[in-house]
Length: 272
Image: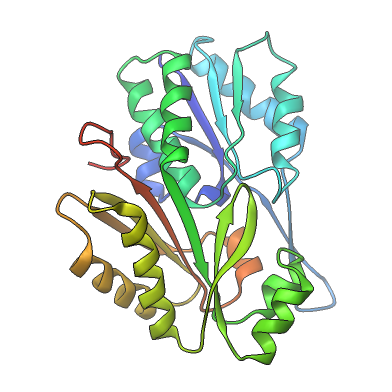
């Protein structure tokens, strides 16, 4: 049996991909207030992850587990994963510090799972996951600022600036933190800027892009059409609804774009 790949639901992997590649996804927690409309999220506990890793080690005949979770700056899940990994013999469960979230993590899980299915060892699976993360970038277009402000994922200053200027901000995940990289007044201008950011980073090379939307299917389809017009030959795009725990923090209308850039012609793609 191959090395087993474990991630959490924030990776946003589509069900068909999970099944095809044999990836294990552990759901993060979404909590609804009994007496109000507010929804919050919580990371996974070390006990939950110990159980998940143990099951996968049994399935893989102790070949090893590679764990890919959302950035430690965004959730307690990473620290819980490190604690869980320590329960097992040293090196049997590898926890990657992804520094990212969404389909950037999902793409790393996909590439690692493909190699695992071909018989790659734990070291090789870890190397390709880290390499994929290093060639990725994630941006989030916010249709409204309030949900992200309330979650504490952006500073009060950024939220105030966006509110006063009536801007629709573009955030980028950098080393696990959300940073403001663009202020636009309309969705169309935001999409144009998002595409510019992808193209600048791509440098004419193929791109794997994943678009995730929060109740904005029509807008996401429009962004996909815009990307298809400008991405180089060999690029691929996936569009899907945003995973629930991410949607709670980004608010309705938000659209995330995760891209993996092929730095060399021989670099593996997470799809294909």
